[in-house]
Amino acid sequence: MKIFLVVGTLFPFDRLVKVIDQWASGNSSTQVTGQIGYGRYKPENIHAFPILKADEFNRIFSESDLIVTHAGMGIILKSLVDGKPIVVLPRKLELKEVNTDHQMATAKALEKMNYIRVAWNSQELLEYLKDPSEISSIVKIGEYASEALITSIKEFINDK
Image 1 (tube, rainbow, N blue to C red):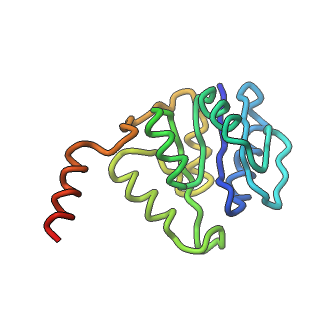
Image 2 (cartoon, rainbow, N blue to C red; image 1 turned 30 degrees about the horizontal axis):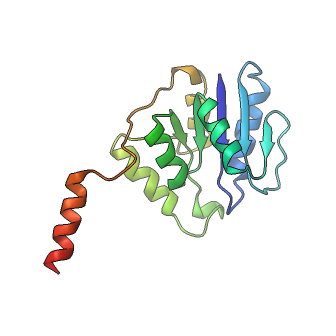
Image 3 (cartoon, rainbow, N blue to C red; image 1 turned 60 degrees about the vertical axis):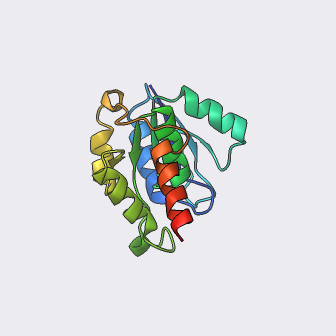
């Protein structure tokens, strides 16, 4: 089992890195690789990199069985397009992990649509990780917008 931990590159997300690192200490049969940015917390039980080059990132992503991430749209969309199982722990404004609560809104909307699994706190994330091999992809989306959406947008623009 291979897990790819992705926290984005703009802000550190020590809360997520720490819970995955601690989980990995008791789950040595699972290989965890992380792109963890430049946070204060230094993991001891995962292969961690502040930033990965695109080709390396894509290689690790494609070899991974599960993506654990913040609620960043880039990694969420990549996971949905590729049909990768994903669990999201959104950053929280109240914890000063981000400047707005947009990640909470993103996670709520995508969970409501049944596109992603959301862990609303560290304990829920650990519940998901009790058997990570049981987590499957919920939905796979196309790489491009549907013809119906494109037509709808064109009609909207033409009506203005």
